[in-house]
Length: 172
Image (cartoon, rainbow, N blue to C red; front, side, top):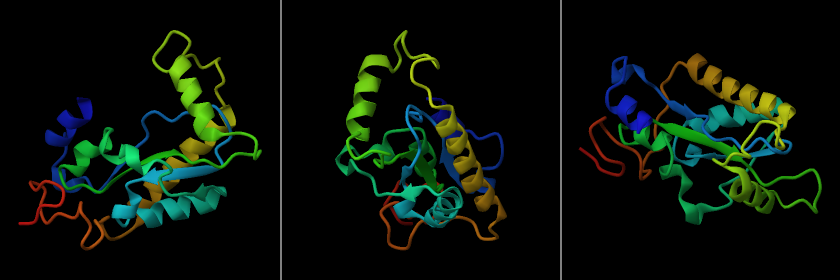
């Protein structure tokens, strides 16, 4: 609700908002070796993510669960609806051991802990991964700020819009 309100009633002129980098809900419970940057396949933000991930030695992967359409199910979508290129960096599936199933481990941890009394920093939090996640999002945001051109939707993409009042996929 907060992102929807802010995206619809920003504290700065909407045209000054060039991108949204959603950092909500990282599951920092094991080493950050790969990411799945939701939404970057739709815009020029893919270049900013590639730069930041390369700097930190993080592998960039496609969404391992496209059937869950996670890009349109979180705070960044409020900005997408306003025509603002957005992304949400999620963990990828790369593990330090082939025997470790990242997707299964994350699901089990969330089922047992997420939004429950056991959802505490002392319950499996990986500080090194957290630092890397913050560095990654800083580098993405910094590279966006240092780029002279505004982020844009990819030509012909479903989310490409010609104005801020359009719905995704709708043209003026």
